Amino acid sequence: MKITMIGTGYVGLVSGTCFAELGFETVCVDKNPQKIETLNNGGVPIFEPGLDELIKRQVEGKRLSFTTDVASAVQQADIVFIGVGTPTSADGMSTDLSYVESAAKDIAENLKGYTAVVVKSTVPVGTCRHVESIIRKANPKAEFNICSNPEFLREGSAIQDFLAPDRVVVGTDNPKSKALLQKLYSPLEKKGHSVLFTKIESSELIKYAANAFLATKISFINQIADLAEKVGADVSDIALGIGLDNRIGKKFLQAGPGYGGSCFPKDTKSLATTAKQFDCPITIVDAVIQANEDRKKAMAQRVSDAFNSKTSGKTIAVLGVAFKPNTDDMRDAPALDILPALIEMGFSLKAYDPEATEEAKKILKQSEITWCNTKEDALQNSDALLVLTEWDEFMALTPGVLEQYLNTKTVIDLRNIFNVEDMTQAGFTYISIGKKPHFPLKEINIKSCNN
Ligand code: UDX
Ligand code: UDX
Image 1 (cartoon, protein in one colour):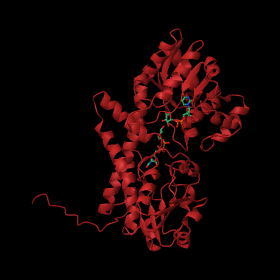
Image 2 (cartoon, protein in one colour):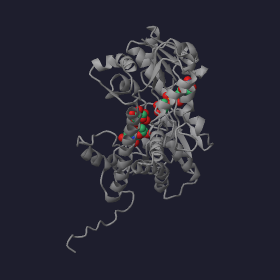
Image 3 (cartoon, rainbow, N blue to C red):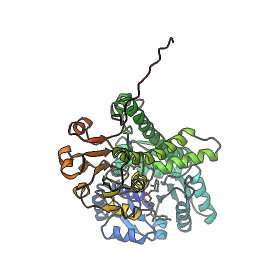
């Protein structure tokens, strides 16, 4: 059985490589010749831990190859996956399906023999039927069925998420395509991983419902963190205290500066838009989106608070700009809101990220940002430290080390990587998330119920 993956981005490249790892001959196609050239020269266009070795092993095993020739790749395939980008449209809310439609046309022109056409990209409910009609119209004789197979890959742990998934979700309405997908995922099923077959529309909506629910958990704990600061509670203990209830679960309850990445922001907006289009708005998701937007903007204010708004001429060391650790992806990273806001306030910035600097430089071009090659360079003679991404290498920074580099003992830690007590005892002005009040506690008046 031969597989073709169209799109070699974060989703397509990992998925195609993992199909080869499962033992299936896989061709990864991309329109971008530079990406394919990099891959064919042994390079990897994205940072994903372990991907370079896995690609090397599959290419040497002759199970994986890369090409820009979509025609031959589609003609030889039993299953063709669409793994191209589905970014937010210019209107800021709906989904740009132009890449998916372009891939569908490429497929229609080259289908040969019975083929399962599978949409892996995250697409609004109804898109699989839309792709099916594009192909049917362009090639009425084509023997194919459309399927949905969304991915649940987290950047930084994508290979693990693919090869040891909580579940695989497949939407099909035809036994022939279902048989092909069953064969493809049987190595995972044999290892005890769940493979759920469902209707196409259910599969499309499962992806959005999953991401929107995870984003809801994050916006929820972020707002609980704000209240915790006001009343002198500790959000980490609250997260643990609710997370030990297995109906809630401990994961995705880490308060921070707001969620970013190429998925949660895009997928929550897409779901909210789809719901409105079907005249049943999901107002909870609308609120999650608003809460996240507001939060990213509010985070810069915490830095200003640390200087009692005396910000001009001050330099901030920014450690981490990627939207999360173990990735170079800057898409919708909180840094993209926070750094410009800090510059607006009059701060100069010295920024360092272990992997995302090159990506960040393409977007954050302000002259007030000095990009540093080490965290020590960024810290040296800065007036404060701002932690935006919780890379492991930042965890090792102790108050004693920070004191050697910083002009003033001021740390704004938006990922709670340091310990409040350690920082406070070392005499630092330490601003964290949901751990301790930044303002004098308001008197909490509990009105007795009988007055
Ligand atoms: C993105 C989203 O992050 C994810 O939610 C969605 O499920 C799939 O789209 P990603 O892999 O990050 O996944 O996309 P991106 O990094 O933009 O890569 C898409 C690739 O497809 C690009 O390399 C682009 O050159 C290629 N492409 C696009 C084609 O090969 N053919 C096309 O017609 C259009
Ligand atoms: C997400 C989903 O987890 C994955 O299943 C889906 O396929 C793609 O989208 P990803 O965007 O790569 O994966 O990263 P994730 O680890 O989910 O983090 C997303 C954002 O939420 C990051 O900005 C992260 O910092 C933030 N986050 C995550 C929190 O603020 N708190 C948490 O507890 C978890």
